[in-house]
Image 1 (cartoon, helix red, strand yellow):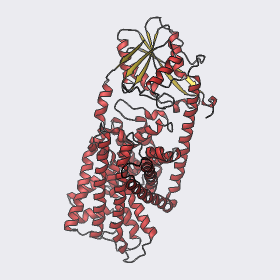
Image 2 (cartoon, rainbow, N blue to C red):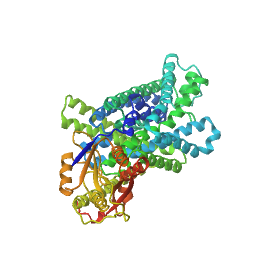
Image 3 (tube, rainbow, N blue to C red):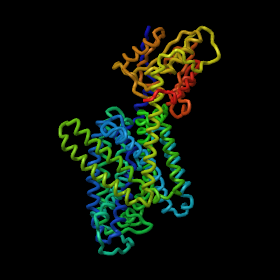
Image 4 (cartoon, rainbow, N blue to C red):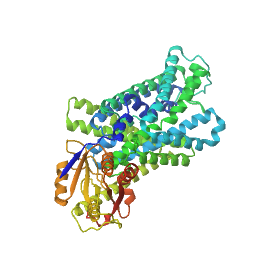
Length: 621
């Protein structure tokens, strides 16, 4: 006998409302890119000033080249969003077209970049704050950690809540910067600003230009975040994410070109202790209220720019974990749709960087751009392969565009790494390599566990850890099962039969297209088609009663059990598996979440079987 149910749950209904629109997505995921105009153009000016005042005339041409690269990247990531709507960005495209090793390099570079983005954004905002209020300078680290804690708390509440909270400061910042640019270009600097004399003549070599270009490309950080977090958008997510990406490109390009043009128009020179943006604002508005509006909005946005990572990194970790390269616990979400484990890992790693650097943004910025360019380059190369393979309409033009982008970002990656070798860039490369090795080892452990599960799927001799207590022979025993079948499922079913109750195995399928929703507890591999699962079930458990629920998540199991427990004595036995040496690391946490939900919302008795899987005894690949 087989019964099919189609429950609708409260958690499923509210999840869509918590997703992003194009506007909230722009606010939540582009703060880093928006705020980078506060230090991107200045990075160009600082390099060119070393060659003399005349070299500053290259500020606008170099900025224009960066904006051209920005346009290439925006077009590429819009295509990437359509081709890879499940997120992952450079990781997804590298995996599909460049191979597993390249995808791991892309994933590692993105992970490092997201952590550095949080640390740099928070410390930069703190530095701007302590510049305005010198008395707070003694508490730089504490202020930075407090800011990080606040942003973390908001994101644990839900990304849309944080997105709505950040719309106003983002809008104020953009309007303020555009006002400075428009007024400055139309009316010039009406207020005197102290300047530092620079030599008029100097040598401008190709390396200096490349260094200025690569430094200015720091303004491109965060361009990939929207593509990485595409699944966080509401229905019609591809179009919504593409609109957000296009809006980001237009706004960022306008601000970059406008600030560069204003620097040349007002003949701004770098001055110690005062940012270029502050000099521009003071020259245009003086030290009045408008000056402080611009400065405060810059401080706020630099601090909030860390939100880009909190939106993008957990989604990236979820995608990578689904491929077995990170612990499966990162795939699990809370009731409000938050990848809590990913958010907490990001917060802890960023806090460690802040403490180690002493809250000094200048110690972190040199490390910032390396991984950004690595990810950009791999994404561009992957899209070149994509167009060459698919040969869709205009594929040659698209491949050429991505080839130019790959050449530019690849050159920038090499230049930044070489030029910043004495400032810690080699440490970033080392950490990247270690992350790649760690992800390889993680996948190896999951693969060996999967092989053992396949070998023992029909083994009825494995004892497992059965509950020692007994129940009366009345009532039901419910066993949630996932596909493909594994030894943990066998143990749970044997335990259920031992209680002398009617046993019902419950399996969740996603829709009428006959695809299973979930991933197996221990491997995370895609579940087989429903027909394959039915065949597998009949082969190994021909006498067991299988219940199939059509719903998007484990809430359907909870609802089904709650309905049964209203009239019957119900015992739920949850299969749980792990590795003998790394059980907590490899486990997805799905059993924990399901047990907690059942205990909180139903009257059923809940227990678990604990099947220990020794991966060292699994057959070799």
